[in-house]
Length: 332
Length: 298
Image (tube, rainbow over all chains, first blue to last red; front, top):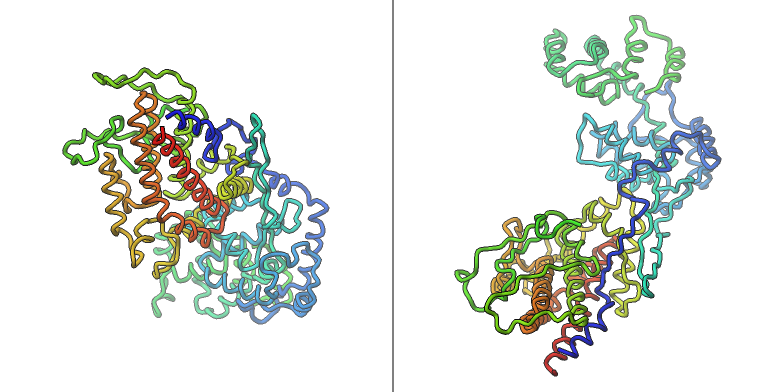
């Protein structure tokens, strides 16, 4: 056993020593409540973001957001200018092609985004709101909170992380640094070396700050989305139910909304919906898809729904030019 | 620091039927004492053991034991006990990481620790470096990423038997890569021979790597307790058992598992775990060889 004791000494600081030194990390990457992103989100755009803002304004001029167009298809059609920009790789925004989607063309990215939104049609509202939320760089923690808020009354197995991964794979968003520059996945932070009693140890450092930011393609898709036109098309296609839609929007716009049971009583007995037989859920679903109704513990009319009440349900048809002017000024 | 005896041990899946006495090998279960389930409640249970110089319990002096010697406070024996404590802690950590996905608390705990940077073993050095690097790049999505990687690594999504690094000895030692084969029966017999049973909450086979590592941890703890009592013979016997189990079981199949892990793992957490396990098992086998060889020579 004597030799054993000598061996023990040799192994005293051997490889399987995991020593605990009560080093308190000042930064807890998993539990930090406030982050620098809050300052970014609340403060005025910094210089590094101003270029993004300018590009957004320039981009909006070419976005296919034309209220006077005859029909808006779900498949996004890029304007000629965007297509030429994509071909020449001539984009001013800093989120150029440095992401894992670099080798994928702009059109392919748009196809991926389309496919994602078609596949997750039931989560479209959340996805579009995420894209809108990420028009400025947002910390990953803030995105998690935003998704929780969006899904407060709409439980889903998808978390903010899941959505961010799906959108990033589709090329709609990408990781950036705090200053808006591209996030280098391969540039990992290395642990520090701590020397204790002459023995070196790896000491993990504070984690990386990850921000999400919309890509040009994501912004294009966001701006191509025109739920007001979708609603107008719906009313044009189902003109026989115009009064039902109007009634639904009106009753959901009062008293904080209506429950499903109340809507059933108010809508299901309407003579118009007896043949063919339609129930309130059919109309609610259509309006929800067009973002005119939302569920927040009760069915409520959104701002877009209120605008539609003012503009689309008038007794006399409004001239299209006037309608376009009113469309341009509204928000979802 | 929580009292180890009072807090329930949620994450231990092996139940020691007779903790303090050296179990007889060929005795049937009828002769074993009433189970003394170790209680513990949280993941910090194992990690608390990582404290250097953590105080161990003073065990009661067995009655009527003529061979018992008073602990003589020999510093070298204490150093050996220290090493056993640290080996036990390492086995506990490895066992936990294989058992299931990491949790937020565990990641936080790991983030606050130091990892040796001067390992002479290349795999150990790589394992510690990867682990420390992973912990240096944590963000809010790290928890989800690690869970996804755990599923990718150990659960897979195929039916061909080669879609993941399945952490069961039977898979790597049976002809058709099935679970619950001969290897499971062997380790089950070994556990029972040592007075150990799996807890009811563990629904998989006993040849899961997590259980085998936990078994080594239990033997380390017993050896440490035996040394504390001054029972050198019992400690030697327990070291022999560790040596046999390590060489006949763990080292026989774990390298193949680790090779698969390196193919499937995409985060440095599980890549580092693969290297760490490989290096640690190798150095531990060398330690036990040297210890037992030196004892035999003396």
